[in-house]
Length: 300
Ligand code: PPS
Image (tube, rainbow, N blue to C red; front, side, top):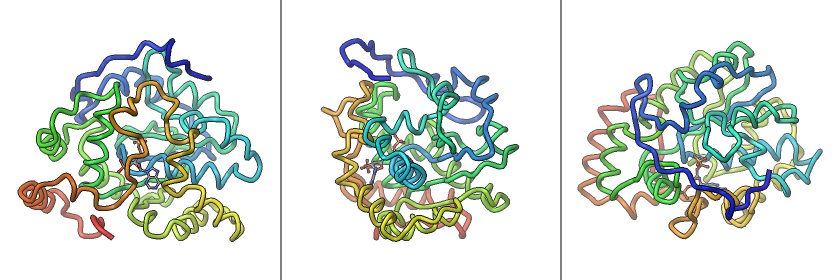
């Protein structure tokens, strides 16, 4: 499916509303019944994240691990959002994520979601599918999400930074509270061996090691050479200039405001948080993040 930006009428910015206790917009709830009835297959792989935690990065890694050797043309000709459909997205003028997922010809199918754990369609659990969850520290996640909401026409207006900062802490973001999201998935992982929980910061620090862990979880045995190639191919600068992963072909996004592949760093929050905001944030964080087993790095 190729999109001609000239022909596309852009949908409008939506309002947030409470949906089963989670802040959402209608673009991700309109197809709710169909999504809840999605028929997963046992070899499906779900890539689950809070928005802006490294979804695209891990999607590209998984796509290369599975199909890089057998169908290298795939990565050169099909944008990531078609190779790895975003299950719950339902926006006029675009094919729904659910329909794209249903039509995927690959085995396994790689499917992306930003749902909190309690929203995942039940067939993924019934089929005992593997799930890769990626988490990113709250401060950088917030900053990345702010710039994304500025440039993405189907997200609510972000408003100014200070306002956004407070809304993030209150969990008034699309897909709800970051705190609930990362904790909800972490808790689920404790009893579900089919969840691989990984961190954006670890990927930055040692991409190859994370590819090793992912391969182990998925039961794959890429050669040393293949692993090196993948790690090199998915480096930030390479992903940024790769039109098949940098989202430049998606007309909903305004790259004049901010690029999708923006900075790709740990610690960019320091360029956004004031000292006062940092103090307020840290106090609030301590109250919300009580589980000592879930720890994030905000610098490396
Ligand atoms: S989305 O819209 O939720 O799917 O976005 P997502 O892909 O989860 O997150 C986008 C952020 O991830 C950064 N990114 C990377 N960082 C380092 N290396 C690589 N290869 C990479 N690919 C994507 C991207 O730049 C966004 O983060 P920020 O901080 O805004 O740069």
